[in-house]
Amino acid sequence: DDDDDDDGLGQLPRWMEGDTLAPPCQAEGDVVRAALELAELREGDVVWDLGCGDGRIPIAAHVLYGVEAGGVEIEDDLVARFRARLAELSIPSGPGGVTAVHGDLRDADLSSATVLVLYLLPEAIEELREALVGHLRRGARVVCNTWGIPGLEAARRADCGPWGGVRLLLYTREASLGCGDVAPPR
Image 1: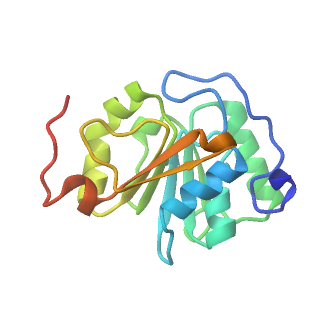
Image 2: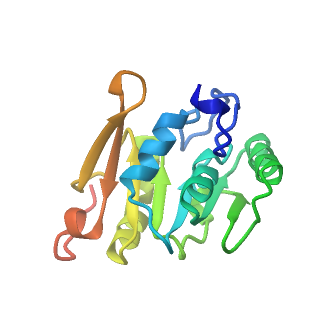
């Protein structure tokens, strides 16, 4: 079982009460790995997961790729699990490590991000579209789980999870914005 490996994913509950921005579930280990592979993480990258739940994506990014990472989550119990897992794995917080932010992802400072990962509902992606386009313009890569960014073309797609039923989409400045032009907001 992939969840028994000491890769930062841990054995944690998968279904929990959600909010209005994200589905009420956590990504399985193979989906986490596929999202990070799709992002083509490299030295110097800084990964931020929006609506990170228990922090499995930022933790895995740090453990598997050695990159700095962070996650933003509004649910108290999930942030507590995230922080407990960081302590259990002796992962430092802050620069060079993993940062767990308790708060609204719409208010987070993501200026250091080179990769954004999100598993958000379509309405939330629509709400964040302008900010996501801004990150793409400055060269960040965006990985979306299941739902894409309206009006933008994904650079690549990966199907993973049980029976290949989880769609991951990678957005890049070059493929998704072309020559800096962006499709108008919907």
